[in-house]
Image (cartoon, rainbow, N blue to C red; front, side):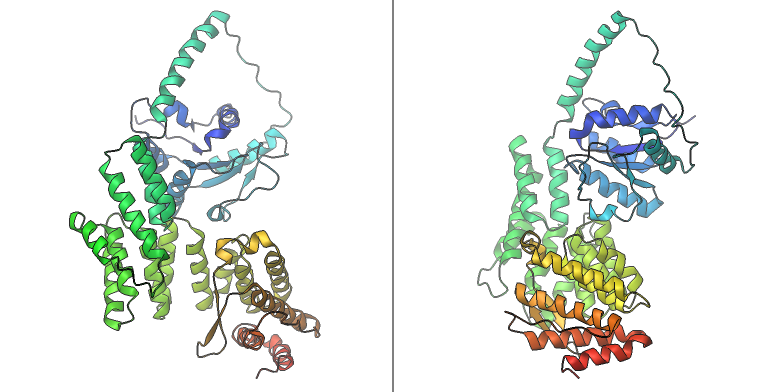
Length: 485
């Protein structure tokens, strides 16, 4: 008879080990079969394969977040669990541990799941919630039951097992310390998601442990080339093609190098090279070890060609491989372009400290009946974030905003904080006017593109607010205040 599968796999930060051990024991007291790494990983054996096996076979996965947040080894486990959720509907249960701080930044791709929060609740009540998530059956509350007394253990037995435990833990610790292979795993995830500086760091860490590791040597060269190409301006005279060809001589089928070849072709404005770039991206996407980044690039190309359904699949596949925020952002944008507003809104709303996401979500709310108040709240949040220097200075908020000014697709690029704030304030004024029938127009202040920003808001109103018949007259009146036809 095959062994009974584990009821739950506990993915956790090693810094929370004490709290996790207590949780493990509490779940076992409830008759659950729990997988914990320190008990299941055999010393001297490759631990990555064991993790893959348990994630593929466990009945549920609990992703534990404590005082130190998500650990470096927990992130690949989370990605694997998310993949299993997509492939076989593996129940994924995010759990906030009792030692977690009050203000906790949660990973974006876990916000869609129902959390179990073990902070500040009676122990049995929190465990009841977690057991319900694991088994699918709501347990009878146990808050009135007394704990089962432990069995007495003779002191000599304790002493003997204590010595044996020290030896086992020491052997396990030595066998599971980060090695070159584990660093290569981290580097691969960083490379796949376009975080090339992180990839360089992890490849170097692998080389520090094994200076002759050929995969690490090649990976670092590839990541350095990708970083240089990414940060080079489109009109940069530096030619990276020779360096790329040198690497491709020994690795002609490498998916990352094919993608970088496509990147160099895409910089050339000639139509034939644009088409060649796409062919390289497609070739790279069909390789066994494809990256999320090449799927992202295909999504961008399909968006520009108006093939939104294909673009959406590209972004979804990229997010499945590497749940990075930019893939979710483009996914939400594609839903918005397709008029699938209810699908776009929750994705935008889960993008933390991202003012543009809130403004885009507000536009989607304009398009839905009875959501003007929600739109106003989102625009107010965007303005608060834009006024916060720590948020405004985040790299994702430093990029230009591409805002369309006409039905033909004409657009302006908004880069200055003053113009971003003016756009948010003007959109907020539009929502307030449609709600209350009156609203003062904000001043452009230091924004030099005030008139163009007015055209953007007018176009937003045409596309989204006027979908609802009850908003047509009010939106037109506001456009008249803007002196925009």
